[in-house]
Amino acid sequence: MTESPVLIAGGGIGGLATALTLHQIGVPCTVFEAAREMRPLGVGINMQPNAVRELYDLGIGEGDLDRVGLPAREWALVGLNGNDIYAEPRGLLAGYNWPQYAVHRGQFHMLLHDKAVERMGPQAVRLGSRVTGYRNNSGGGVSARIEHADGSVSEAKGALLIGADGIHSAVRAQMHPAQPPIHWGGAIMWRGTTWGRPIRSGSSFVGLGTHRQRMVFYPISHPDPRTGLSIINWIAEVTMDNSEGWKQSGWFRQVDTADFLHHFADWMWDWLDVPALIRQADTVFENPMIDRDPVPT
Ligand SMILES: Cc1cc2nc3c(=O)[nH]c(=O)nc-3n(C[C@H](O)[C@H](O)[C@H](O)COP(=O)(O)OP(=O)(O)OC[C@H]3O[C@@H](n4cnc5c(N)ncnc54)[C@H](O)[C@@H]3O)c2cc1C
Image (cartoon, rainbow, N blue to C red; front, side):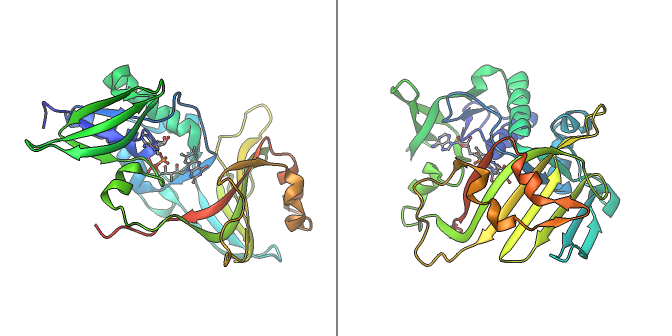
């Protein structure tokens, strides 16, 4: 095991966290990432205390996480009349030994990448390297087929292969050729970030609206000491009839706020102005809520 490296397909959050853990316990590994360069993609993501515990154990502590996010203090559900339905404290305030962190997904991803390269060397994370398949070797171990960004193809030998290549995983597709395709869950999400003043506890995850039409927002940065403004991550979501499937060509596209603002035009209270939050966003993306059924093994 220690002579032949573990191969990891995918340098996303799962792949890089696995690589850091293998390195920590003395198992050599190589990550093959399809993207040619690491870029801070994505917006807000919440990491629960059990995930933060693992990061602390990897030596990724408060100092690191406070640069890419902030501890979440509260989770609140609010009705369309503007009144609380339910609210509870989160992380340390809820009695856990570890905080919950609301982070910028892209910056957190870059943090994991930087730590992996710093600890394991630049050769440990091979960019522009797409795993397209594998075969189990007769003498033990596995060979992964790698397609490089320049079009060349090579094979990497390892003790085992971990498929951390995301929802469209090529490794899983080979292991489970009969898996059903991804399906649309019947909701469209528009996601963006806007500089704004954090409300309630100063770090609250707020879910607002109904099961048919809702808005989720929470800060993902400490407030700028000069302005008091934080990066507010928001997701506006509308449930749609999905009987005919997803009709747009892409699963992820940049859109204009005018395309969907009308769904939320009258969402204004004395403590929140949703149209303004949406209008002032830097960039907005449209994503259908997609899902994949679990495989049997
Ligand atoms: C660009 C992007 C933006 C996201 N934004 C958000 C967000 O804003 N909020 C949120 O809650 N969640 C977001 N997510 C989802 C969230 O990050 C993942 O659900 C979660 O991190 C699961 O992690 P993962 O490592 O399993 O997969 P992912 O984080 O999806 O990582 C998979 C990685 O594998 C790479 N890859 C794919 N196929 C191959 C292959 N054949 N060979 C080699 N490499 C391959 C991909 O380029 C990617 O880097 C985003 C994911 C991505 C990829």
